[in-house]
Length: 323
Image 1 (cartoon, rainbow, N blue to C red):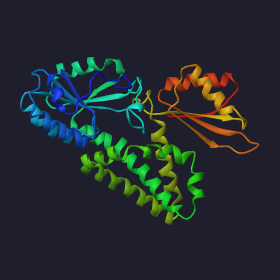
Image 2: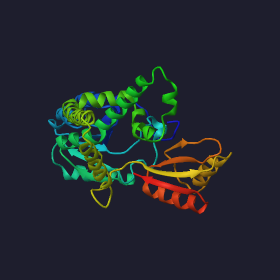
Image 3: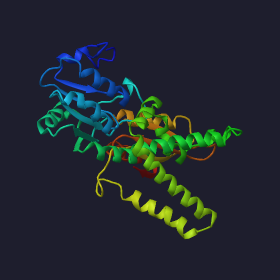
Image 4: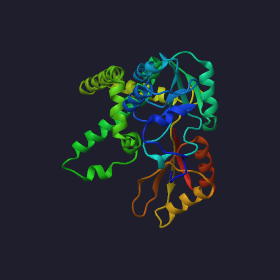
């Protein structure tokens, strides 16, 4: 309440008895428990219950206790956010242009439309899926990448156990691909538990690719190693709104900055004065007497485009952009 985000706090779910909409926003294991508790409460006849959990099959199984009573449950999952957690990590535009999945326990166009009306200010892109389709998609493009990022950080930490300078030097590409390893451990341990079967299958497939590459390196099969990277580049370059549909993500801008006192402050102040929000900022390389590479991360492509124009007008050299 001190952040002026809610009007009333309850210590249990009894407050839900008078609600028209109930949105369960918690780790999946907690959502399952909450659904079981809601099934024993005298909810309003026309209430719509939904959630924002990262897996759906286990949630819809738990929601059966409600649907058997005639209570409407629509599973939900906004594909947006960041590696940061807590109420202060929220922003008004956090879900803008992100896909928001709806997974009805029972087909109900009216209830789905009601949720879309309730959340219209989020400016999301709505997409209806089955629970199985949802869990396979998020397993591959969200859950597996988080495992890979965390595993890489842990393996690197062990590799540099006797050489602390190694972790201090980790920057650039390493920080970029491991950013999501900073996500909430409680949430991700719950996600893996709730989507275990799919994740194990996807992990086995990923490990098989690594094993194949390991063999190719050992046997110096240069053409196959080249194909490994070429295929990945081709597929990665095809991602985008004009090709396969733009999923929400982060938009990076890399600029060259002089190694001078006040340069970093000048960049951030310029963007702040123009109401451009920076999600993250990294100095990838900076030493005496040479320029440094500044990586600016934005939530929206529009913000990155505006930042690029402003910085170029001020004489900064843009090196590259990444999505």
